[in-house]
Image (cartoon, rainbow, N blue to C red; front, top):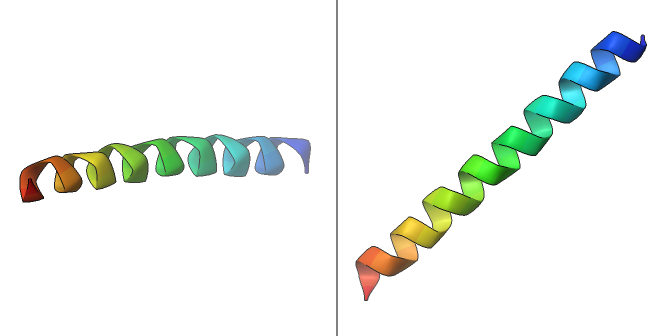
Length: 31
């Protein structure tokens, strides 16, 4: 169960990081 939670936590972390980068890039393109 710990392995599943660890994988979920890592995917959530990298997913949030990717979304943040894409969001900042989109904001920069608008200006």
